[in-house]
Image (cartoon, rainbow, N blue to C red; front, side, top):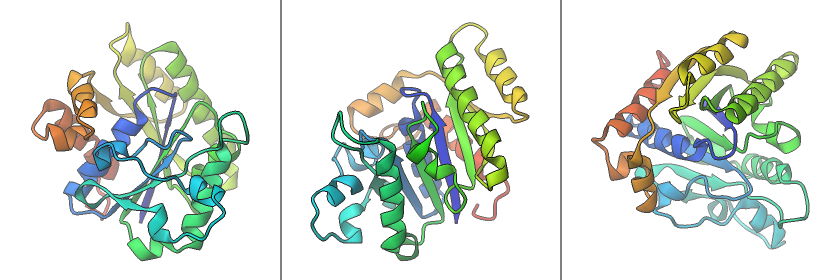
Length: 251
């Protein structure tokens, strides 16, 4: 089982990228699980035609018995969808939802029951502390991929996330798999992101073009690969999936 976590500044396009990657992996015949680790619980919407999924934290908050099937929904091409959720606005720690969700999935035997080939964690990445660092820890993700554009705030957030990984290295946390450039077409974008990757002795594994097709697909409540499978943007997501899997035997 390959386990990957995706971090980056809020609004950088993590959920869109991860959901399209999930479909790209599923097209290969892989069993995919996507775990949304954002309090908004909207990571997997495009995989379910816009249908909301009750988050694990909401199930826990009701203080009533629930089953593994209550936590999980099966989305497009069989992608297994889970949303961690978050606290009521203004109360509690948002990272707590991630800790609770991952603990419950483990306790309920989710990985044994669904036997995913690949698990994708879509993590709110402006901060890397407490529960938000949970997917990086040993036993969860094997690799972390950081999404960024060439915008200064995105670069700053990406550097902070990479630095956290660097600081966690001695604890056996996940390794940095690389940076993904999600283009905003700003000045010197390629050079900025390349410099960032070199600062952390890493690489830019893919450059995703800015495309209106992404917005068009979102308005349909679908991933790009479902709504526009023959588009250039769909091809870009498939190429990213190829770059991540590389020579992995899962291929």
